[in-house]
Length: 339
Image 1 (cartoon, one colour):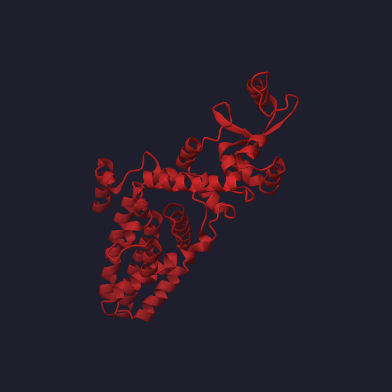
Image 2: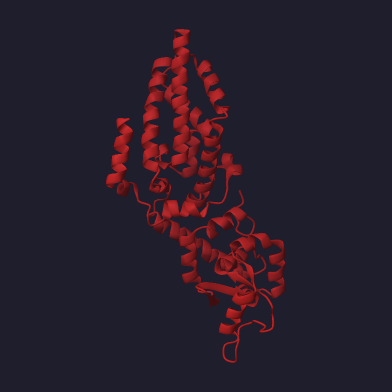
């Protein structure tokens, strides 16, 4: 996947949707602008000066990427808002590039300014801003995650319940493999890989390679709650069906028979939404937070939504150690255990 900011809307949105990075960028880049109602705005002339391009080039990007820039905050000021701006900045001693007789004025928010800086290919100034931008984004994610992006999944408050639940279904599944499948002990690794492939198209070795995990690091310790839930659904369903089929036949199942059950599960319309969601979350978050590309899931990649930055980097998120020391979390896990 192309992650060049000038070409990839996903890469651009992964910067623009990160409120912690935007705050840091505004402080560090110090690009100026004009203040209006607690918001920093930039006129077209200011944008052209900051990016070292002419206004016609700004107009060209407004034409070619207008919808994207509007989402980022570009807008046309009219009426009272424009009057307020003129009152503050148009005068004998404080003149900004605003025609006092103009009935409207296009302005960029700081977010929209960053957006157009990520689009402009004709300017070394824009290129330098993009480079600084990426450095700051990486620093912010590392700082907020405690430098452990490999385990950023564990900062989600849904992770522990999902991991605990999946561990319970995992035991149910391995017990079913032991009791109802006629195959050597390598069956546990073989069918773990087959479930992984059904859920996110990679076996354990491929997954570890993408995330650069050491041999002793556990794959499931790095998986998001949605992925663990999808795996748990597979494990539970397969365990129940294995027992049912084995008891009906009066013998253990063959690998071929279990493969048929697994294939039917992959096609199950009730499981499809959970699998699709798991693939989107894994592919998108791993690229946005871990700079890890799952090539087999490339067409599932979307921009990381703003809510996910709050979910994994926000002030209310906690490290796994912090969650384990939280009384409410431990009480919830106890309820799960006692069910």
